[in-house]
Image 1 (cartoon, helix red, strand yellow):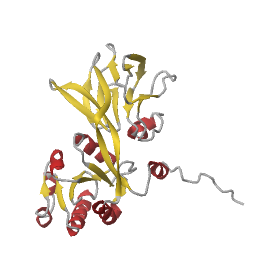
Image 2: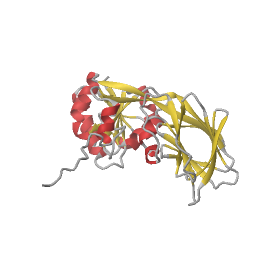
Image 3: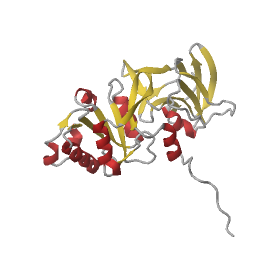
Image 4: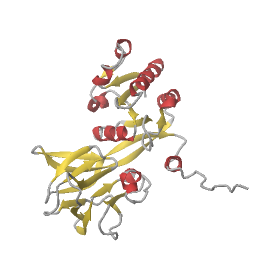
Length: 295
């Protein structure tokens, strides 16, 4: 693999410098590089002339791998926009937690050497999708972490009816409702009390956000199921939000059906680590909570 696309969150501190550093290493190794036009425009001419400029959606006709410079949000945005491609994504972490963008920016040289040498593994992560009428045309939305149907422009709760296939689940009176993938189980859903789900598990989770009834608990269902959500006729307006980034208005009596997509996100991981290693590191499960007694 020697054709590398670089997707950059220019809002991240030091992002451009790190990308220029990566370009230098890649060119030294004989690789070809592409970036988005707005990124190339920010580079010095001596660097810019050595890289291709393509919209992200066209990276598939150039690159073998896409390196994403940012945080987990950058990875989520890239995964959604490239949902219909087959490109593996590698996340270089310039953010905080780094569940998805797990490669350190301080290890760029060794990371690039591993990528060009094929010393990595690729894991497929489930995407979910739904189709809504936006701007008077059907539009398919994708999410890697979750869809959130949540209240909008009001501090009051909303009322959501939910079905799994043809089976009615409940009337949720809450701040909102999440439909999350296993990947998203360590994101918004985790803060709402949802379970941590291994990414290989073929399931989806339905997680209420601050429900009025404490007996409304997170529900795990097969990812072969379709989950339909409808906003109650007397409810306040809401928004359907994909991965906390892409927002669509959702009015009373609207409904949507969320299903596992036939597309998936392909993520590059270290060859010598597992998902459980990441959990221990990122959630501090390996930390020693014992406080020694002072004599």
